[in-house]
Length: 88
Image 1 (cartoon, helix red, strand yellow):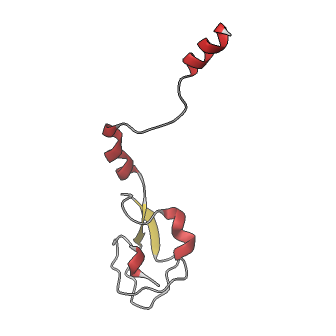
Image 2 (cartoon, one colour; image 1 turned 90 degrees about the horizontal axis):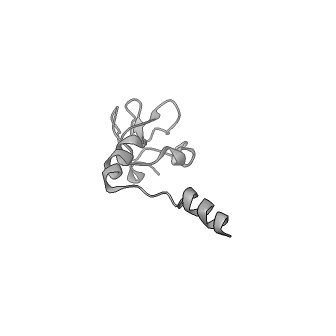
Image 3 (cartoon, one colour; image 1 turned 30 degrees about the horizontal axis):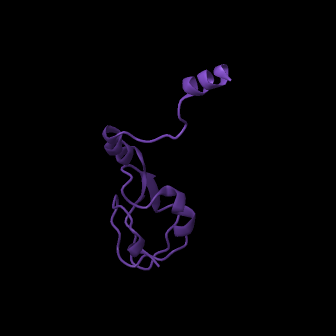
């Protein structure tokens, strides 16, 4: 039993948490969906006109499948970060 406790202490806690100093880096390191080119109002969003890049303060690339084929509600300029209100 003593050996098991020692192994448990050596292994530590598995629960991974960010330190405060890592929070800003976490935001910068994540990606969001941006316009790869100008997207006209009424144009369909596709792999040809959206791209994932940093920073990660907008829509996560994991939602790209939900966005493809949606219609732009407004003109979205090249390099602009997309938001959920930009398409329907």
